[in-house]
Image 1 (cartoon, one colour):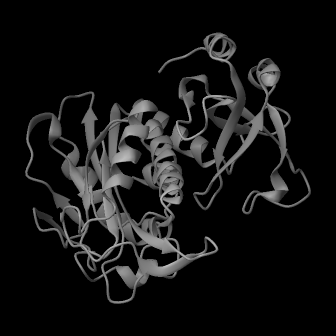
Image 2: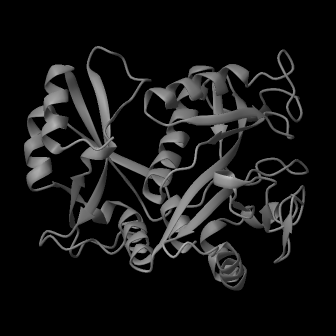
Length: 335
């Protein structure tokens, strides 16, 4: 939605909103937030809300630690998992130094710069991630166990599939937040699930990815489960990927997708450091349909880049190497 700051403040007043979460992303891709009360909204829009950047890993030390959050009114969304009484909404933020200059390690800002650079060259991208995750049972004290919630397989149904209600509730919540899920199903691993959502512009796609993770974790907790987005949580079982579907348009009207695919393959060694950021990322690659070589193919799902069987507006490429712990802003900026 293209809300203005004034429209956001009016909505907060009329809807009885009591808390506004100002959300941002750290370098590692973890969502952070600070909650403010409605009477602080004018200051947030005019000047920003200060926070201690030195307390966020990767944001620098105690020297020059003051940073400011500037909410993007177009990202306003209610949090359906919070109670109606004391309603809570969220906005994603840009980050600046006290003098107003952009904070260099604001990865949302990095993606914005990449989008602007591409636009200046007549190029526009759309992204649609496919997110896989595991659901594990919690122990008697609420701690995560290593026991999956079920022993179902690919596209199984209830009662074998015990993640069905979690996926259903997540999809309904995402719809309430203006995010359009396309499909959901049980994946190959025990307790492994996948939810895909519709293509969108790079900034919205990255914002939606963070929102998706938060929704899945919240819903799973309500069922006494822990959602795990790590790339290889179970030895000998399929890993979890964040397959990135992307399409590209050129203002000249030419087909630039072959050039984009060639560029990704040329730069993938360096890109992999960011798309696959933890040790376990490399336990997943090279097995169970996760790519191990710099290759492309039409349809073959074990390749680095797959060209799905689609035509027209659905024509796209799919990068299959990233995993769900990647920072989506960095991932999309690199592509």
